[in-house]
Length: 364
Image 1 (tube, rainbow, N blue to C red):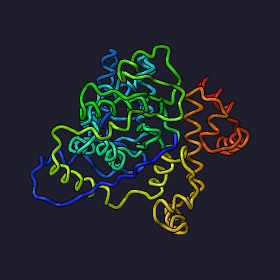
Image 2 (cartoon, rainbow, N blue to C red):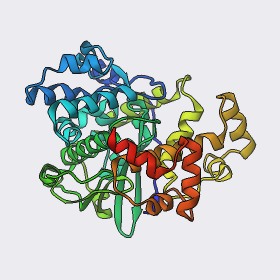
Image 3 (tube, rainbow, N blue to C red):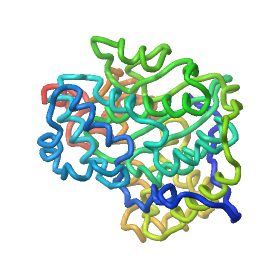
Image 4 (cartoon, helix red, strand yellow):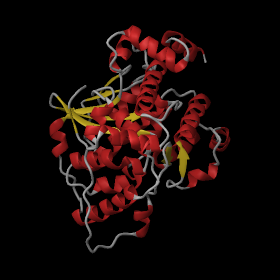
């Protein structure tokens, strides 16, 4: 799905305004691979709805149950994946992630969600989400693009070997729809929903929440809707409060401590299936020389090719494990001209051909 991609950056300024201090503490600097609980906090009540005591499940995932008392607490993306895997097993519910996302609201997105509420249009809000989600989540990346008169909001997990990436994607699109409906009205529906997972036996929960056609076994988690929806106005948006919130986001994003290599991973995960992503092209996109890109990555102890192959392997692993996409289609998604070239690359990454890896994963 190629199209014009937005790379929005928040604008900031300084004005006199009064904002509740608690609202400005919802974001904090994240290290790569970590997320603020936010949406994941809803795992606890969903488990309780099934009559499952959440505390033993949370402990089995290697987490302290008290973490879930505060949405601003931080956990690793890997731990979230483990917890969702255990939750699906305990409840025997293949759409557990969807239920988690259904319970979440735009405020589950923390400071970014509050900023979205005060953007002028739906398009501004989604571009703000794309530009700033990294202060809330450094395990997945959103993107917004336009193709053939349709807007495409896409969510992709990029942390390597994250369990239950399909459940995470289900929940992300579910809360994205909730967020848009809170901004534009409860009657808003996407035109189509694409999910990178096998179709469950019962697709009713998906159709009930999204109120749209749902297609499974797709290469990405995507909401598709008419591009004109991006111009929908957001009632009650306060432009002065927006400036204050943007300044807070800018301060958080400007702090030292995040890794340049993780920024490249996020960028590649967002673009690798739809764009050419050579080191030269990524350097050009970042307005830097190819040698500068290499030097900065060497400072992180890694090379560009290694990162690109890690992302390709993660995409391949997710599609092999979570969908029934044929090898040829997966190969094309990753930019390989032939399935045989993809098979050779996958063997280098995993030590076995993709057909065997997929078969063993299904038996696990």
